[in-house]
Length: 134
Image (tube, rainbow, N blue to C red; front, top):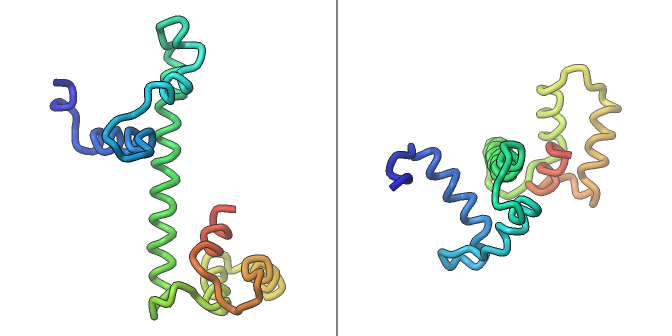
């Protein structure tokens, strides 16, 4: 069996790719979803290298996004010392200043104004994620 010869990292990547298609978590994927990705290649019954790369690339992008989200979650937790689910805008200013010491007070105020849309003086993870990923 091919799966037996794969390393754990490759199997994990493939399992995550499979799970993306198995939306109902039944352990099966609908073939029409795969056929949709394959597009015209299905009519020919063959895949070019570029078509193959496009398919695999879809899975790798999602994997990268997932890894980035996890890193940002960890960074957010580090500054959310009380575990309240938010950080203060003052803490965020300090973080931004550490990341780029060329930012002026006006720059920082502008960024905070954009991020803290509701003016609560706090930034939750979703706002933080939006700021960091654009």
